[in-house]
Image 1: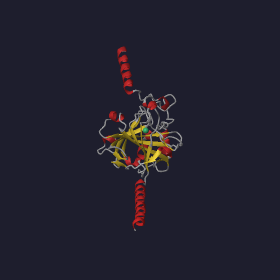
Image 2: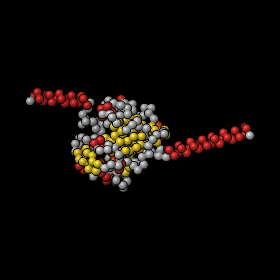
Image 3: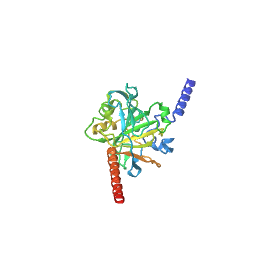
Image 4: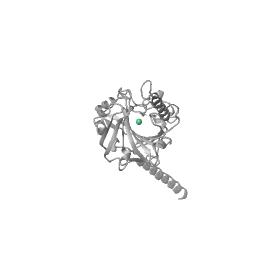
Length: 306
Ligand SMILES: [Zn+2]
């Protein structure tokens, strides 16, 4: 009895050592919140989330993000992991949904999505735009083609996360499939199935405009492995759906006071912004410049030689 107990304790110690912290030990409360997270969460220099400020942002020529296989409809497993509600299983679909373009190198396969929120409307999103928060934020997590999760976490470009802001409105379509199941995953450890979900429904109609920067996971171990794509256009969430989210319980069995990490310094990073109209503007302005240049040159030549 005694020896089996001590070998169990030994196994537990090994487990904690292997994974750094057990998943139950971190959270968003006073005792286990972001200020207490260790490792890269404290020492990293390319941490997420950030406040997107105009002064730190440059217009950039980037391809649109291609969302391939996002119109399929299939099933996923929804889980309350004590930190958020996440839906996974896309990687087992016949045609795995993936993203490319958007200044990413290669394909990134959709693994799961999850949400961050607060108890009040003026906060909840992890990223901020010019100091302002949205009431919630959706993260679509993608893993680079050909890498295991372990490998992806050790590379600066191992993961690509698409961040989508949520705005309160009357259209409940984007979160409809998930919200119908939220009452089945109120407590940590609860799991249920969504039989039919179309990933495209989680995206705004316009995905051409986005912010792009190099960052990290926003939960321990805060691995600096993420290429961030933050869509400028939000999706909508109804007040009712948001209230459902706010009832989700954490590891301690309490409603999340919030489950968003506060913003962190850029440490010299620049944010790239792709406006929706970029292609046309760029084309028009450059062709206009060229025609102006030709007009000026030909008028000079005309005066010189004729
Ligand atoms: Zn997240």
